[in-house]
Image (cartoon, rainbow, N blue to C red; front, side):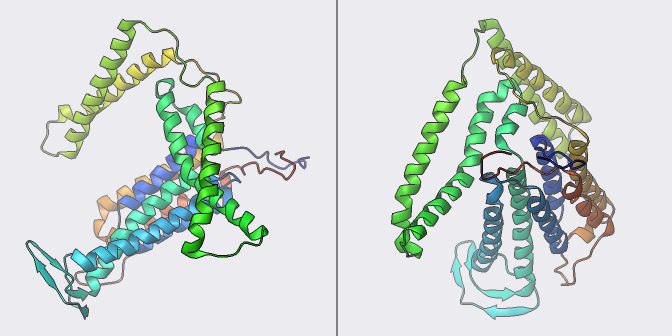
Length: 363
């Protein structure tokens, strides 16, 4: 029973989590300041630790952090191997190998190592933001929020997103079973004994998913006339072409204004109409639709605010968002950018707690 006055736990709308994560990722993409990037990763980790549920994908966030750490190490290793060596503070001199157009190894400078680590940290922070969205947003609920025309594509994306967390869960379950049976061993020797049960579990999950999707009518469409299919294809193709031209016009400062934002808006509008027309052939029902209330607005808005404040900071003082390496100096801590990232921690306090499954299977 729920105590009186206790707020009812529920799943936040998955689109709100993705808007929050994309906004935080946009903020990270505008800087290579390690202080800001580490703060953004800390905020994402805090929100995940406070608001993740008990689902398999919710427990896979640490895999994204491990992947991010691996990317940082790999970026530094690539700099040592084939990167452009620059700086004044020499750390060590490796034997160099001269190849046509490239030099392997060679002298290592502190400035170059720090610049490579900062670039790797930026990519790692983007992965952490996307990992936070995967850990917090239920992919099955996200599928229901997609337009009807993207239902099949969304189904494939949801299945692909849940493969890695479910695979990690299968490995953990097999390892626990081996420990309970008294079978020790770790490292490379245990890979063969763990791989076969994990493969069998993966096949069982695939068959169960296929049966569930078939029983729910996935892939079934109503009759659609030839003219309707042609209209859908023409609108969607024209819209995507217009959106591509519009993006090129926005990125190219010398392009005419007409092929910038107006073409992008027109292309997106035509694509939306095409998806609307094409979605008529897909009939689906929604049980317990996800509400969009004040918590959703606050969570999504916090991510947007983080991105906007970082863009404003980049426009006013772009040097404060970069790691100074020539000459080497301590990174700045711009107040506006820090405030934007801290605002992204708002979901820790305003997002509802997700329902947690009890031992008896109830919620």
